[in-house]
Picture 1 (cartoon, rainbow, N blue to C red):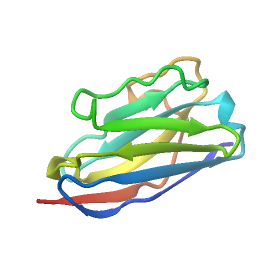
Picture 2 (cartoon, rainbow, N blue to C red; picture 1 turned 90 degrees about the horizontal axis):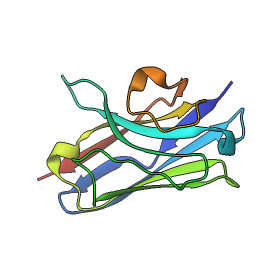
Picture 3 (cartoon, helix red, strand yellow; picture 1 turned 60 degrees about the horizontal axis):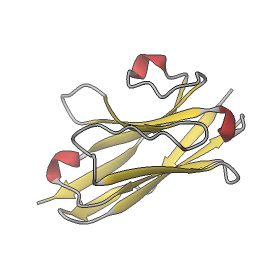
Length: 124
């Protein structure tokens, strides 16, 4: 069973940067497709980006493309979400998720394990 723990959230001014981390345990990270999602108050959980097992494929939501970067360090069993040029509309709880499949999927329903989430607040 996979356990995921996010960290790195916080309060930042618009235009600033944050790096979120997601530490995995219970299963080797290299066997997992990983995704990042976010949920703002009153809104549905949405796909932010994902990364394939090798790291070669990293699809992103249009709203974050060019500003956010996902990476993984399989030796450290950790996935990262680097967020630059943050905007107030990026404010949300951010979740990492693990998928046992072989491709990065955009729908949250396909993911098998979730972290507890970390709050990101961007002030204007």
